[in-house]
Image (tube, rainbow, N blue to C red; front, side):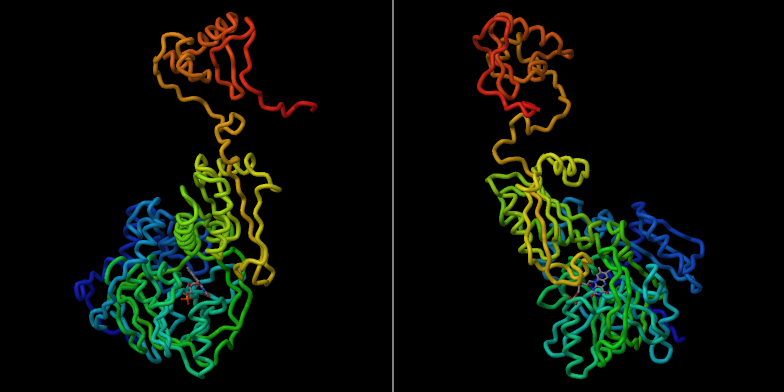
Length: 540
Ligand SMILES: Cc1cc2nc3c(=O)[nH]c(=O)nc-3n(C[C@H](O)[C@H](O)[C@H](O)COP(=O)(O)O)c2cc1C
C-alpha cells in the first residue's frame, strides 16, 4: 500500500485547518469530561455494545486488528452540540438558525495544502476492508461506516449536494449505501441512471458536528456553502484526487469514487434506523471506491444510530431535535404572541414528540400553535402544549399537567391524512397518517381561580408591613399566608387567633378563592362573599 509522503497541516489561504478538525473537537470534549477513553485494544465486534451502553462519547485508541483510533457519539448530546456551536443550551436552536442565514466563502486550496490529502491510496491499493467498518445492530446486513457525509454535484445544473448516507462493506473496492428515502441525492442519482451515467461522489468520514448539520439541512441552493455557513467562517475545500468533487480539506478521511450507472441493483440492509427499528432490505446503488485519502494521524469516526431507548444519545436524534426546535420556534414566533420554549424529545426519534410552552394571550392560541406547527414541520407527530408555569424539560411537571389539565374529548386535536415519516412503523407502509395535538393549557382567563392554581409551599419573606391583621385586611383582602408574611412573624398561629377575634366580632368574611375580607357579618360566623365553587362531591 503506497501511503504517499506526509505533508504539513496548519493554515492555508488564511484559513485555520485545525480549528474544525474532528480530533481537536474531541480533545475539547475530553477536557469537558464528555468522553470515555479506552486505551486497551477493543475488537470491532465490541464497539457498538460499549457505545450503546455508555452515555458519554467513546474514544477507542486501539480498535480492531489495525489498532485504529476511532471516536463515537461526538454529536450525541446537547452539551456536545452546545460546544460545537460555541453557545449556550438556551441559544442553541437560534444559533443554528442564525448561522444558516449568513453566507460564508468556500475557498479552494491545492491538494498539497490539504491535510486530508496527507495520505492518498488509489488504484489497486484501495482496500476498504482495512478500514474500521464494524457491526452496529444485531440484525444489520453487514459491517458499517455510519458517519459518512456524501458530496455530489448535479451534472446538469451544477448544484452541489451534501447529505449523510451509511456505507456497508462489500469488498476491497465496493460498499453498499442506502439512498432509499426521498432525498436530493436520490433525485439526482435516479436522473443519472436514466441517462446511463455514473454519479461521482466523495464521502468524508471524520467531520466536525457542524458539518452534519449542513448535511442534514435540505435546501434548494448550493449545499457545499452550507458547510461554511454552519461553521460560521470561510471554509477551505480541496478537489478530490480521482474526481472533481470539492470537499472540506480538514476532515479526517475521504472515500472517493462513484455510484455506478446500473442504479438500484443490490439489496441493502437491514440497518437500525433513527426511530429505533430496523429499515428493511431495499435495492440500492453500489459505491465504487477509487481513492482513500486521510490525515497521517487519522481519527476514525462512527455514530450511534437507531438504538431504541437510547435515541436521545444518537447523533442523528440530537441533531434532528435541535433543527426541529429551531424551526418550531420560528413558526411559533409568527403565530402566537408569547411563545416561551420548545423541547423536542430526541428519544422519540428526534422528530416525533414536541413539547411547547407559551403564555396564552388570546383564547385558542394553543390550538393555533398546534395547527401551524403541523402544517409547517412534516416530521412532527405529537405536539403537547403547556402554560408557561410548566418546565417542559421536567417530565414530572409535564406528566402532572397532562394528568390534570387535559380532557381528551375537549383538548385533543386530531389531524388525519397528514404526511408522515416513512420510517414510522406504525404507518405500516402508508405515506399519510394521523397526528395529535394535546392542549394541556388551563382554561383561558381562569388561571387565577384557586382550583386551577398550582399547590406548593409558601416561601415566606419577612415583610412586617402591618401592625395588625385588621390593618392588613383594610389594605386589601388577603390569603392566610399573605397575612402571616405581612405581619412579619415566623410562626403563623397568632394570625389564626387574630382572625378568630374578628370572626367573633362579626367582621370576618371569605371569598370563593379563600381570601380573608373585612366586612359586617353575623357575629361568631365567617361571612361568605359571592358564591362558593360548586362542591364536586355533592351527591357523591
Ligand atoms: C448519522 C446520519 C446517518 C444518515 N444515514 C442516512 C442513510 O443512510 N440514508 C438516507 O437516505 N438518509 C440518511 N440520513 C438522513 C439524510 O442525511 C438527510 O435526510 C439529508 O437531509 C439528505 O440530504 P439530501 O436530501 O441533500 O440528499 C442520515 C442522517 C444522519 C444524521
